[in-house]
Length: 152
Image 1 (cartoon, rainbow, N blue to C red):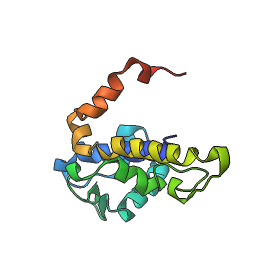
Image 2: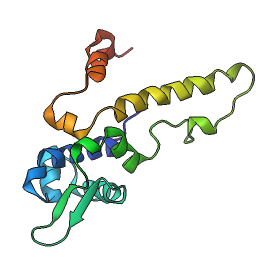
Image 3: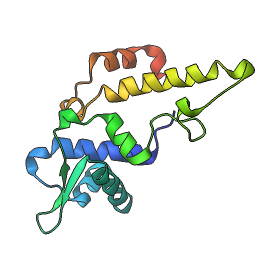
Image 4: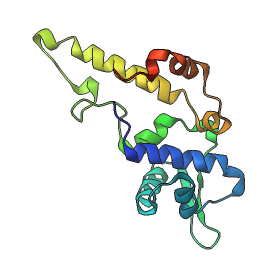
């Protein structure tokens, strides 16, 4: 699985809004500067996040962006889906839409299991978790494994 630049930027932008939620609407320029995201690219991402119900926008001098719902109700998976679509796909298709025959038959449950594990992690982390700096224990446990930091 690859995390696209678009998804990475989207997660960082939503996190920036989460830590600034008490400030009201935050300008895209402020988010872009704080997270070193190209402003034009961020504008497109924020549009996707708005259409996905993750952020709200307000026009005008006091305008900007803010979370559309509480940070504890938005998961990393929600944001990735809003900007990139399905979290795990094989050749652009969802694993459940695939069919294999012969010796390749075991691939389908493998891809489905991969999707289930990725979803379990990304759906288990909210922006309240990230904003607090405290990841859920299952995620901390996975990241604490020495092999997780190795590149085979």
